[in-house]
Image (cartoon, rainbow, N blue to C red; front, top):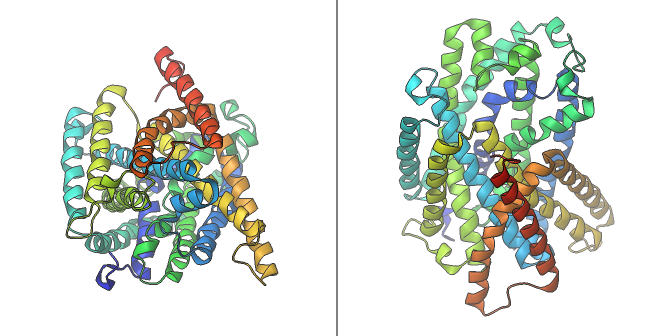
Length: 475
């Protein structure tokens, strides 16, 4: 793994960040946002997201430079600052979020194909799941050929997916109508929306999902050719994706009214472009989405395996997960990931899980890793570690960390109690792997504080299980 031939350059790291963030979310953004908020709340929400996510990007950049010895950042920062169980929980939550997002991508891909081939339906028919399974294992064996090779293919698909998005932005900018955009800025004509604060809150989990992957370069810090490239790739990738997301969302609100957008079938971007130019617009976006999802599936397959491998290397996960093949791919981690994806693909046949439900749950699982990374940045700058003689820089990083931490806490509130409880239900079983890792090292399972934290997780998981059983909660 340490050989130069297996190191990733800046362009590959940027492609991993961009490729991870631009999956299916941007192609469904017009409908997902319009169903929850009007123009004014959307603009406020994007402003909050831009500031919050930019500070998170800066957090990952700062920690990559300040703590170069901590590889696979999103997990390592939680462990370094708050102990083994918090580190494990961050890795576990990140991993679940990543592969569950891939389940959502498979559903969306075949839902898109269902526009042309009705047999695929909404992406969760038996034939759709069978085809998704074949694609899953094709991606699996592609990744088995090597991290560097898969990263190169990801660069190609990242470039390819940007073409239809840029074409949409140009066409939509020409067709944009200010009178449609300003028709009901604050959503007063739709009593179901509630207040502006409610609208902003309701759209926040959507914005989280489209930015999941911002930490992609940090996860691959151990494989970066230059350590400084990790932070640069994070910020460059974020700014580029932010511009694309805002333009796609805002321009759509000037093409079709909120009620029209809210009723579009996803990928709703296809419906918007079809409204402007006719059927070929829907075809263009559908092709772009297919390429985008294939690239995102590859990116997230890489990231899922890497996070398990890194935690096993650091003895936070069991040792069997650090096994590599001759191509330096963590094979057991990859197998575990894709078996879980396969299981949940089958579950979608019986639970009727939609793309939106899956991405909301995936978004809620990523909140804990983001929260602990921001908290570690605050801890580091607050006590002045690595800032000897750099008071001004320390204060700047402390301010950025505090804003990022506040944003992460706001996201927990915005997600609501339902997804908090469902997240606890998914976090709880992870203790089995954590206990196995502790046994391998001959260490006690929990510290006193960790026992209390795990107790809270069990309470939340129990409430979620009862809620699912009684029908109060649903996936």
